[in-house]
Length: 126
Image (cartoon, rainbow, N blue to C red):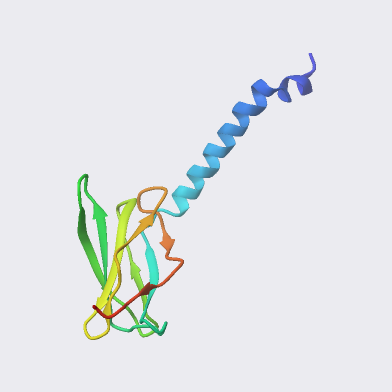
């Protein structure tokens, strides 16, 4: 019997490729599921906003509920730890500077680590 022909046929290769893909995905999830969400807050001119309050909202079957708040550092950077959800929204505000829109953040799995690509932009109400 020729083992090479057996191992290189589609009935072995396709299930083998599926098993490898599942194993790689599970490895990725296991190394990126700490619930860390980071990003930046800037004002209307694009300058970092220190001391802004950033809120994390999680979906609970029918509505979004505020779960956590953090303050930005001197560079306008914020960091949430232990986000338990995969369906979240983030918003920021600072009195005297303005408020950002609450933006949805798409995550592929619960507690996925992510960094926002675009900063939250505070704009004056009006």
